[in-house]
Amino acid sequence: MSTGRTHALRTGALSLVLVLSFTMTSEVLYPLQRLFVPEAWQFFHVLYLPHAVRVIAAWLFGWTSILYLAPGSFLVILIWNPIEASVWQAALVYLVVNVSSPLTFQMLCMGRGRSTTGMRRAMNWRGLVLAGLIAAQMNALAIVAIAGSQLFPSQLQVILGIVLGNVLGIVVSLFLLLALFRSNEKRLLAPGRGRDQA
Image (cartoon, rainbow, N blue to C red):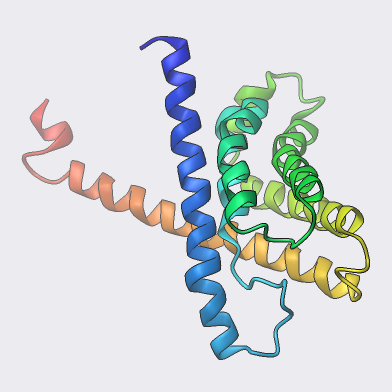
């Protein structure tokens, strides 16, 4: 497969997953949250899945994930404009949140004497959660700084809410992915399949 086609497929797949994760968060999880926890802050998502998509994309593809996620981010801004700010503010916020994950992995892998790509992909789930936590803090500070206090008068609550929702999103996503991989592994290694066919 050509390099151009590979990049196009990754861009389409990751952007689609980003949009689907945002649809799930905004149209399913957030209404449920409002139903059961109506006193929760308007901007606060108990479980924010798009952050997990960004972190996992950065773990797999590093800085290139920014380009892969760009079309999906653009669609999210056009459809939802989640921070209810001007288009340029929303675009700047989404540029920052797409940069924060690969930047976090770069910082975590610096000075180890091995390639950044190899170290990044060798991280276990704890490393991914740590990266997600650091990137979530960057995201929260950037959103509050760019969107301004007029949108979020209680900035500390917003920062804590964003960090909590982002981290829970990546923990749940990693748990589901691990369960999926283990389920597929058991199916592939069942009698008559996988290694038994070799």
